[in-house]
Length: 56
Image (cartoon, rainbow, N blue to C red; front, side, top):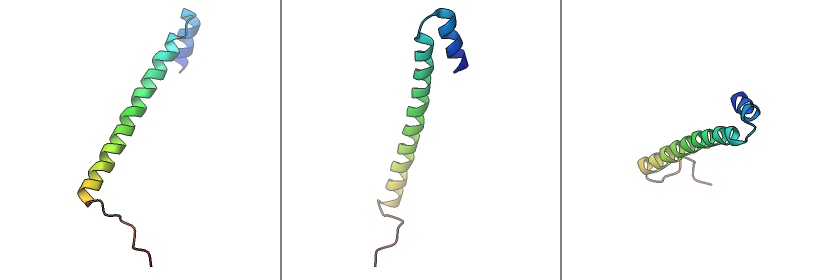
């Protein structure tokens, strides 16, 4: 973040902020994709059964 702020100051432009924002977006999307992939794998492995006990 400090590098982006320094880049904005040095270049008098907003593109360093956009570069950092894009990098953070990629990190977020990669982690979200991994979570979804693991959840799908667990559902397939478990056959869609819930681990919670039956009510009553």
